[in-house]
Length: 234
Image 1 (cartoon, one colour):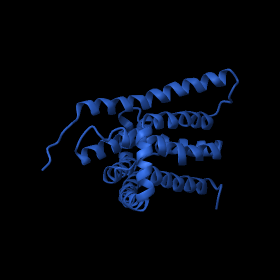
Image 2 (cartoon, one colour):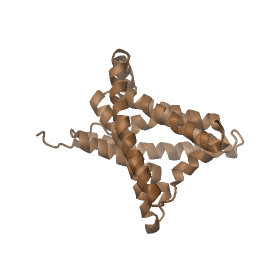
Image 3 (spheres, helix red, strand yellow):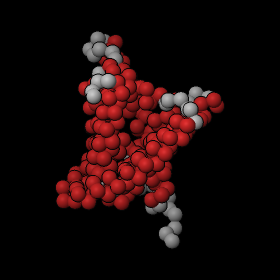
Image 4 (tube, one colour):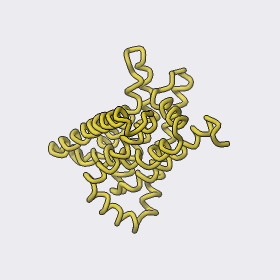
C-alpha cells in the first residue's frame, strides 16, 4: 500500500490558490462597484457576477497556462478517452447527487441561496448569466479546485474529497447563518458529489479539459432546466 504523503510545498500552493480565489472575487467586486459608482457600468447582480468571472477566468488561465497548453495537445489526441472517462465519473457523481437531493426533499429542507440566486440572475439577464454558468464558471472552477489542489497529496481519495467538499461548501456557505441552518449541510451531498467526481476524473485522465467540458455540459443542462422552470423555454 502506498504511504500517504502530504507535499508541504504543494499544500502551501493549494492554500494559496484557494486564498487567491476569494481575493480575486473581492478585488473584482470592488472594481465593479467603483465602475458603477462612476457610471461607467450599470449596476446589476447579473452583470456584476459576469464581470467577476470574466476577469477570474483569464487570470487563473494565465497562472496555469502551461497546463492548459500541454493538456490541450493531449486532449486533441485522446479526447474520446478523456471525455468518456470523465463522463462516466460524472454519471456516478450525478447519481449520488440525485440521492442527496431526494434526501433533502423528504427532509423538507429549504433551498440554498445559491440555487435561488442563479434563478434570479437568469431572470435578470439570460445571456450574461448563461455565458458565466456554461463557459466562465467551469473553466475557472476546474482550474481553481481541480488543478489547484491536485498536487498537495499522492492520495487520490484525499485529493478528490478535499477538492469536492471545498467546492460544494462554497456553494452552500452563504445559506448557513446559525445552528438552525445546519440541516443545510445536507446540500454538501449533491454539490460535493459532482466536485468529487470531477476530481477523480482529473486524477485518472491527468487532463483538465475533460472536467471543464463535462462541467460545462452539466451547467448547460442545469441552465436549460432552470429556464424550463421559469417558463422561458418549453
